[in-house]
Length: 292
Image (cartoon, rainbow, N blue to C red):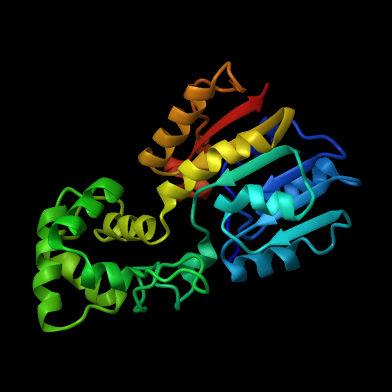
């Protein structure tokens, strides 16, 4: 199953791309956004596609292979944006895209531990080659208080303390290593009811954010991205979590009228039509800035 890019038209329009531009897709995924970027910057533009997940990178390479423009594919975390550009002799670029949503193939891959719908090892690393911390490590080694705080802060889980307490009790008898084991624990506290989302959704989201240091990476990369833009170059950022959006909003506001101009005062959200086709896009927000 290919990943469905979110806010595709709105994002591409907001970047104001033209032929010959150099553009960085910091979260390449399956290449859905990049395909539309290429259409705007060909025939003499340059696409730099970055992804920490080597499997996503290879899928995107295959998907974009027929487009005959210069493409640079980088298997790295986008927090290293400055070094990536330097290593490829790129001083400044005309556009940068960041999409902080996880991709459908990552979620569907039975070996990655992102899904609570199949029985998998508790992993959740985007970069399994270079990252050490896994969801299993967190579940079995973090203190009860730390677990509760992660579930509350990153997942908005109202029963965070109760779930953390049961996890700590269960792991005394046996290591919790499978997604099914964690789901079983969560379901003792969060019963299936009227909510549209699965009772384990918030805990799994919180673990994914903690495993991949997602919020820390966002804080680190935003200044690097703004610095890398040419004058009038644009940065488009798609967030899916209130904490992600708060970080982006705060940084943009802090730099407004100094080094950047904010293009949209309020975030752009998905149309009703898009939500019908892709309900998971309901929390997506797009913010855009332009370099002065």
